[in-house]
Image (tube, rainbow over all chains, first blue to last red):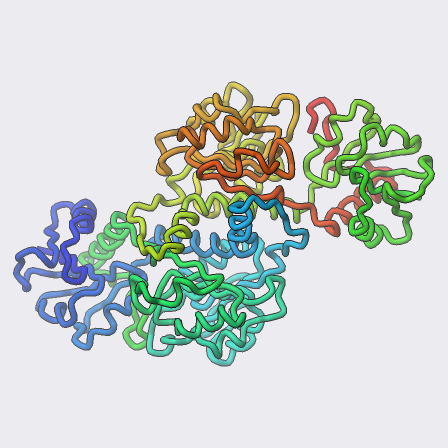
Amino acid sequence: MTLLVSVGEWSVPHWVEAFRRALPGRSVVDAADAFRPDAIRYVAAWQPVRGSLARLPNLRAIFSLGAGVDHLMGDPDLPDLPVVRVATDDLTRRMSEWVVLHCLAILRQYDRYGRQQAVGVWEDDRDQPAAAEVRVGIMGIGVLGQDAALKLRTMGFDVAGWGRSAKSVPGLPVFAGAAGLDAFLARTDILVALLPLTPETRGLLNAALFRRLARDGRLGGPFLLNAGRGGLQVEADVVAALVDGALKGAVLDVFETEPLPENSALWTAPNLTITPHNAAMSAPDATARYIGEQIARMEAGLPPENVVDRHAGY
Amino acid sequence: MTLLVSVGEWSVPHWVEAFRRALPGRSVVDAADAFRPDAIRYVAAWQPVRGSLARLPNLRAIFSLGAGVDHLMGDPDLPDLPVVRVATDDLTRRMSEWVVLHCLAILRQYDRYGRQQAVGVWEDDRDQPAAAEVRVGIMGIGVLGQDAALKLRTMGFDVAGWGRSAKSVPGLPVFAGAAGLDAFLARTDILVALLPLTPETRGLLNAALFRRLARDGRLGGPFLLNAGRGGLQVEADVVAALVDGALKGAVLDVFETEPLPENSALWTAPNLTITPHNAAMSAPDATARYIGEQIARMEAGLPPENVVDRHAGY
């Protein structure tokens, strides 16, 4: 027996089927099946029951079913084994689709024309900024951030990145660490958060940060896009900033609590677009193939790729 | 005296100012000014009064203020002089912004999530197609079509082009002429019309053509985008196709009559997005600089670039 698919306490037949297709001849079970704990060599997990992974004595690696691993890192009993992030081209491309879509929708005032159409108004805008006049700042400049940056640049935007530590990305100005944050925010009209959730990044997107964003840009005020993790943002601050104009608009795919609770003030905040945590959903087949490749590497004596730095938390 | 800026019967001071900035030391007048007809060497025109250009005995060239020239070609008294299209990078980039924005909005169901948000519904889509599974077909594969194709491909879409005559574009399958149209339409989930309006293309986007589009794609039916000219489309057919499902959706930037009349059935057609002919507006400064460069070429004894083929009509 090989792989346990563990998604909370739920049975997830579509994921199990994808793994059976990707790992022909191997045994794949899910948390609702009867299985011997000592038979499990690998776990593909999303929000597993806390402490459950520590009860698998022969486990060799833990695969996250998504790009984020904060759902695993919060478990104090997490075994000291390689934790592997999903890094499929499919997931990367979908995230960039979401980022480019929403940056273009802001630039080209998609919602404004929708509102005009609803009331039969024909009115253009004689002073549309060009993409080159709009500065996008990407926080989190790993695989996802770099792909989004490249595609935004292809569309003509003026793009820069910010990361925890210095990094050289061809053609992309990258600001680093606390020392670089002020200059980065001061040149940012659209802030795109693609950061992992760690103790350092929790609550980073707050009122104080919003006040440091550019206010001299062609969009008439700064915009926030968050497709990283809900815990990055202080939602009360986002609502207040949208109301008082510190933010001209926001697009959020992730939330402190998901699904977003019915009584959240975000549902009715002005100039806010909500997507239901689907900016970049892990496609079961592409994810299962990727994890199958990593298992094959390990069984050939190689280390898996995209292993999480347990100290950094991502 | 050099350049007449002629936009219908209107005085257009912002255009005149842009030309004065681009042509320092030259005389620039508009149609509302008093001027001697024999002093005019060049005209920068948009929908000029019919026959008015024939009354300028020393005219050397006619510059269109937009990418399309059908507003000039309809004049039976159009002088036999070079007609020059605007082909600025600025205009090309803006058109590609519009095309990529609306293709991504379809792929990622922007409007669906907007409707869900309005009623507080959190519901994702477990079976989102990847961009690579969606076939975009671009009709009109000149400068604008090629740039849009390249950018759509960067975003991951499966792109092909169609043109009146065979053309080789690196990496892009191009179908040609009447003979290639069936195969092109049969592999198209999102049809993007960027054609010029000529006697051959008028009314091309009609019920018979919509029925030839792919119906086996991942979007559940074909979509139409038109940012070429309103005369390309038969609007009654577009409305009928949206109602009966021959088209799953459409995005129109151009219309048979503009502004779109209050009583047009398009305002309330289902699954239709309307933008007010602003997919790619000519920015006065970029356009004036471009025309200034073409005048400089002519005065140096060179032919202007992007001269219209009077026989083809574009």
